[in-house]
Length: 259
Length: 259
DNA sequence: CAGTGGTCTAGACCACCTG
DNA sequence: AGGTGGTCTAGACCACTGC
Image: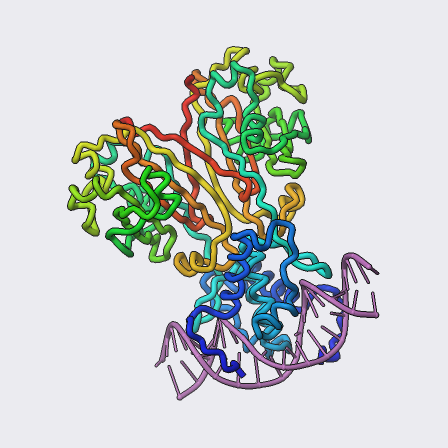
């Protein structure tokens, strides 16, 4: 029937509705946790057919503004605190002060951080990690896999890989808590002075297992960060593979303009 | 009507259809670039209503297996070449050699790069940009908005913002092509020697307008990068806001471990 | 049980692309 | 002009949730 709608604006009706609701969320009219109008209510209010109301809600869902529960309704998502990962979190002065990077950063975001160690022990290096560590694929390395929480919700899964010949001499690396300054401080204690780090950043959608590990909604984006720690001898002494819920992190980098 | 369908499997019909097609793509029955059956053909083949066929296609699209072009059809995606953004693309020596960063990087990825200028001219600074430029929101600044293509497909939209008092004296900044070494070289020509850059990286799902601008499928992830260029006088002389298709970029950074 | 979202039907018209 | 996807209507029934 296409109705008698005047069609002043060229934008699709379902997007107009979505935008209208998004505005109410932005302005706080619909605060976090609040239930948004049901689909039938939207049909009445905007005088549209069921399918149109549904598409409006679906749009808000992919935008990440709401989450939907079958049989209950759709609810405004609460903004998670943003964790910043600044590039100077690896400054030696921080390590000497005994700071653990993730603790400081999470607290700065106003969240209560916690960690759970998932595994510490020998592993066969996956192909991409082996390549970075300059060892043959399948070589035994030390893996340290941790899950980080912010206010109790999992936000980040990180796995550190270290060459076995380096790790075997540093008993702290096998402990759940490697001590003040983290594993980088322990590496430096044992003569592996760090010269620089390289980080590789990718973003993509979470896989099925990743959505469960980080308790994400399907289709949620993640940031995949891989870091090499390089000693002054030029050796890659650690590779850290990190998966983050994209909506909870901002990465900051400083780049000198010098030649 | 719900028809006399037997409903042996509990999975929704539209997902069964999507999975069926996905399997054909995986097996190579539908090779990259191949047009998948039209929606009306799917209706006939699977005996479903239009809406159901549509949802099946939509599912494949969010999975990233196909891309859809209005009026033409849906096509199996081919894996795009990856563009790396390395942190030393801003080295002064590169500027002096007259290299444009995006050209060099795209070519390295084995792709043919191109640019389209969308707008160059005065703009009122958006709030977040104004904050970075240390000017009042709504202040007039120079905006340079470009769309970058890799092998003809849009991959990146970038907008540079420059304070008007700086830009007004540099006529090249108002030209589509600012000359060898880009706008950073022109800034240095005019006494604004660059000391460092800071980059902020976020990842999220594309909004509807962004999906059309970069011709992405809805639900596709994007990398949002904001860069401040800081002169040796300590002033932010440019802010560049970049939106990238996440599946086409890898960001590399070097971080010194020094104190 | 009533209310909610999830799936599906069977049409209609519009907007875009290609020949 | 004919085919394609994009939007929309107006219903139906199913599945999950909470009272």
